[in-house]
Image (cartoon, rainbow, N blue to C red; front, side, top):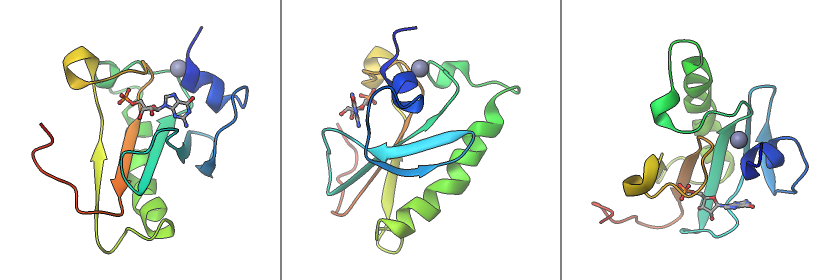
Length: 113
Ligand code: 5GP
Ligand code: ZN
């Protein structure tokens, strides 16, 4: 399958890794939208939020358990951060492998527009 994030998870495409375990991987976004911009992905190919179900939602729970640790390590735990999951065309999804953006390091505007 021609999926860029599967290739990153397999180590076939290099990334600036910040966290890895058997289920998930976190790395710096190649085009950061804020001073800290980390992507957290399941190693398993899940296309987007529409494909989360009772068989795979444990990986999403795990991602949400790990994100606060990553945020703390990146120095944004206290001031705060935003977790973004884009789904589909109108959601602004450009890579069809479920991923969570962790954005911080500046005051993020809301609503995003
Ligand atoms: P989306 O728009 O799908 O929510 O987010 C995809 C994100 O992946 C974008 O922020 C984009 O900068 C990032 N991205 C795309 N290709 C690569 C890559 O090869 N390496 C890394 N580290 N990030 C990527
Ligand atoms: Zn994939």
